[in-house]
Image (cartoon, rainbow, N blue to C red; front, side, top):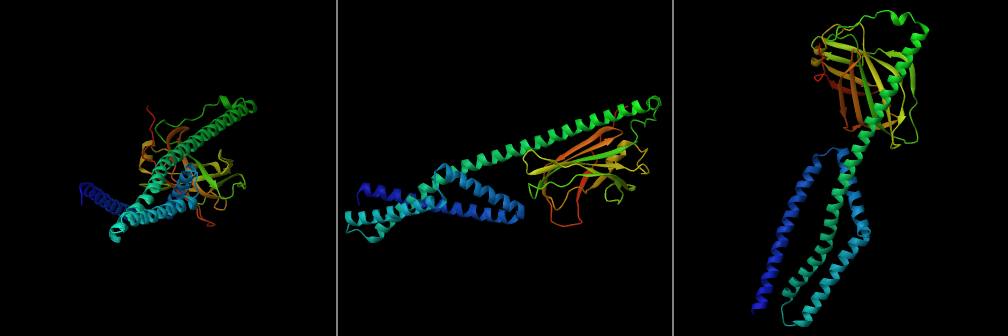
Length: 339
């Protein structure tokens, strides 16, 4: 065996050794991915599978291929290349062992499979990064749209309240001149919790009916839980559903007020930091919505915003009549006005 053949043999050995290490590394990654996949919840598995399928389709589209066409051409080309190499080696070196020819043929087959695999893997990795960025960009845009919509609703409510006050002055000029008792700035005189929710419609063409009933829900489903027990909230059953910008969701606002007879009335505002709210989102229609992906709560004490929290965690809504979603609201971040 001359120097050229020895050098070629060393190269072949190194290539096979590299392929073995690559196969071992791929196997370890596949095993780790399998165990991590088993720990995912069913919604997370569906989201991961949709991401992989969407990225795969995008990669094949970038390569101007279909799934069947890409893998068929890659496998067929590799097999044809291996067969041609085998017969060429037999023709050029008929006296050489068949095992040596088979090794070289196997090497040609592996190279033929690795080239399209490398092209697809590189394209898939790039498309995966762009898909994750696009999803993040879309989620951020929808979140900002929900916040802007909530702000527009607040402006509309403020203008309505101002209009009602002007009407009160016109109908009773004396009433506006009578002094009103104002609660102490650091004592609870009134408390309201406004919950802005965005949910995905089960049927994009069917919006739930608005609710306009000027009555209160007094079934003690919503309350503030603290050191001295529960302080119950009344939910105003007056909800208007608005279609979201994506036409696949709806937004609405629910209001909960602390009962005038509650033991919290007259207590320091700082006492609310020891309470946790349990809010029953009764307006989440189980038949109409499948997932709620944005909830913003605003706690108003004595007419002033004392706490605003936002959550974009997707909450799946089961098809179960008679049940509602319950929102846990820690009040540890309540702001106390300065004297």
